[in-house]
Image (cartoon, rainbow, N blue to C red):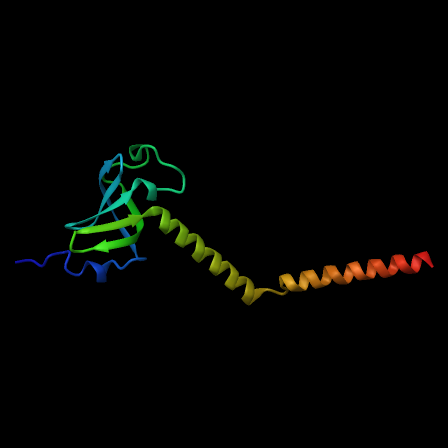
Length: 134
């Protein structure tokens, strides 16, 4: 007898993890994605894109590979919620954090340095104008 694929689903696909799979069914309310044999997750129409999606059929077809973020897991109900929208948000956040880290490590100047330089130049301009009036 084979083990129930839902028995350890929460460990294999914790909330916040990425899941890849093939679209099995496209409906008006979303798409079903098989992430492993015997396990299908739903990407609700509201989670397909940042833009409003009227008809998922215009963007997805059965057999298409997709990647999404796991948003909830319910082994008892045998449901797993997925989101392409959440995955994009996570990717954008990771890119921004990576960019900021690189800037901190390799930066020769900071925003504070720029402001201080601008304030110094403004003071010098004011002083120069004051001396020119004398």
